[in-house]
Length: 399
Image (cartoon, rainbow, N blue to C red; front, side, top):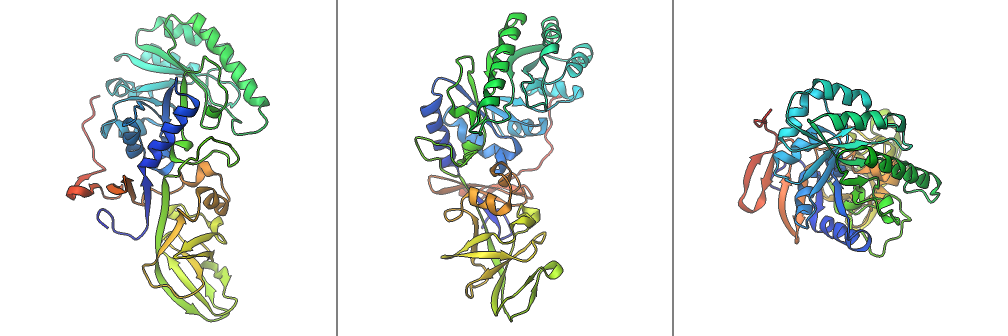
């Protein structure tokens, strides 16, 4: 295949991304703006391509964890609003402003330092407030100080206020309601104190976006569900989300081993009888964690078991019969869901696709046509004209 040179790859169906978001908006929040959370490379799906797909249906607000992730979107032509959730260094605020990005204010100390020492052009901000997760955020006793600092500074514009829920997928909504009440109370006080209008109010993640929301919440943060994965398996929807990601590799060696043969590092597996053992070209450096030993893959028309210790670049599969070298091996796809892959990895579905390394090429499909291959180890290749442009490059950013 053009654009990469190893027989392990990920396929992303952008039609599913588009359909998922369109259906969610139609059924749950047709009157609210969507902020598509594409941090961590859109949970391993590819932030640039997912954002480009969502722009075609009017999504024009994106959220990322770091300034690097925000600049990646800008450098690849994403024009909408981009909010950086994580801390941004004071020395980088001019870069933020010149690229029309939005930073989060998460601590009094950071804001005091910025107000007194940042001399550059105006910076757009959202205020992150603490409501119970206790990770990042302005606490209620500090709210007056923060709003007064923003009121007095001509270099920072307050556009939004947000927080983060700790237990949104849980069936016990006690803490959810506690956080929501705290958030609305803080919003009311901030609105009274601020000289500027707080245009965007947001606290929901994917799970919370399915609940009945207070009228004050006007921006919906969507993350995992964009890509067709529920944050909790038993959440009910009036339509089926369509998973967008499939993960494949290939058999690179197949051998018939006699009973008692040791397989892999530390001789962790010993054949119980004469067995076909296949070596697959994917390992823990790609995101197949050691805990997946004993999990399943799908080969042609049968499920097969992963055996032995997962290596950095390979893993072993006990086969039911001989398969030729080059046979496709499915880890996620039509026969193995992300939830099943997650269970085999003994992790959470938020983790599973994030763990898939960017050394695995991503192939993007729309209308059943391959439209792009993203290989961050080499280049971005547009298939239709076989033109390749560098993916990793050092552009001249206006500082």
